[in-house]
Image (tube, rainbow, N blue to C red; front, top):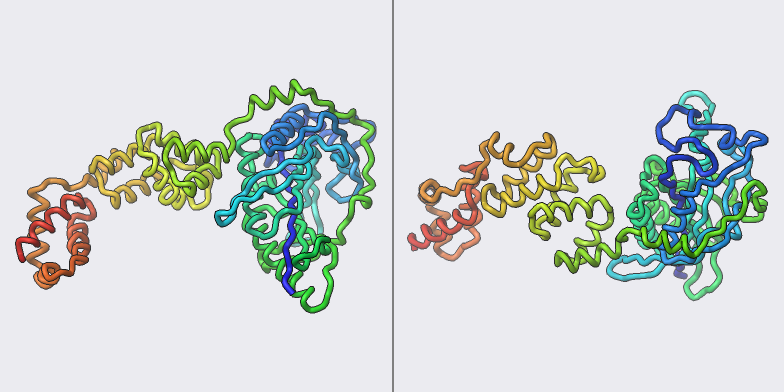
Length: 476
């Protein structure tokens, strides 16, 4: 029996507001434990929350960017459950009346495009953080994060593979970053994901029993966890067993899922309208005003890069996956570099040197990269030397011309000097010269390599190739 995978994602995006959702405490990351707190976010008796209007604005922006319905009327609810890091004993969230309704985003996997439905996007507050002691059997509580504003984005169960789930997650991550409403820092918990997954026999309409993978904070972990859970559930079902509905955690060290608790349903949370917050009413005029503030989004920018710079789709998709990366590319072109060469260099040399770090940490400015690429085009340096220069630029932040002069890396283009070296190499390798003349033209690579070795990579390759062809033809 073969099974169809059904996946739905719940994404939590921490918003880039200066203060929390219901009080004036700072949302800055890295403050001393429990220093960004007040009676409101600590849930002390007698306090009243006040909604941060920026949270509403950001929710509307995301709703518009995901082709979703903006609900003119929404309401906060209390989601009742107890965790040690949830001081009130309930989370202020939204339930049956969220601020954003149905929508969709389009993803592309292996050349196939697919629309993934969004069920809802709602506003809520974050809980605190438990810090477990590595020596003693105790846990400390840091409530700085309590009350930090979140948008929860709930997908329809439209995803059918870990690859689709990863593509959808990356698309939402990019949209949030383009809107500049979430920094997307997964290591700091600003962007995290829960995944619901079940299997059902192909052709069956009703869903199978699902499990929930909780609080995954990297694209790789999401895909690995889903792949493992698919195998685990499939083996269970093929052996005649049944899947237990539960919440799981992904253990990246053991590469397996581990049970956390039995899965709660909506009725377990005993939702009811929050009596301390009035309903949120949004005018059409405000929605229209926010629509005018939307930036160029990833799909729009991708199409423009293809049209404006004649880039292949693959290049445009990669460059626009990150707003700052796309900005860097376009600024490099504006500084005079050719578009395709800039794209190639950024996608290979630059990203390799960054080793996964964001483009904002790059010590080489777009102006400096453009200057380097123009030095290659003008044959001031060779492509091979350019890679050496670029490594030095990444380490020092210096301009390419300064590095070239300091390290004496200017390309050797003096015809007389090159001709002497070409003749020396041919005379020193008579067997290879004879084989070349007898039709083994691939030996040209050998001769060019010898010249590059003698000149430490500084010989003009086009001029060198021309001289070798001419001098070896004279041997025939």
